[in-house]
Length: 94
Image 1 (cartoon, helix red, strand yellow):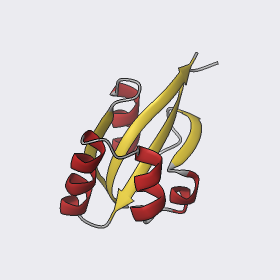
Image 2: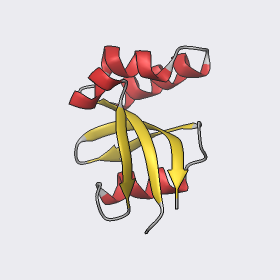
Image 3: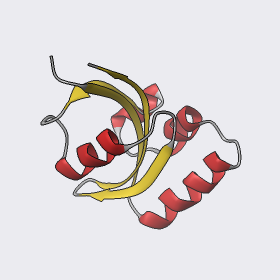
């Protein structure tokens, strides 16, 4: 079975909003709360949780960032065709 990551994300229409949200998270705001409030992706309703996924499933840029991220660390903004993402890997499994 290939390695999988469980990630949450917050999707924004522009980089400035993503940077502003990342600063708020760094200052103590909860990632899931920010996802519910600001994400333009339907996953925002679940706190941004995308569940577990293996390589080859997500957008290549998003996937590369998620698989290189340290657990419980917010990374981004990551630009994809969908917009700007803040990503947090919450678990991994082999």
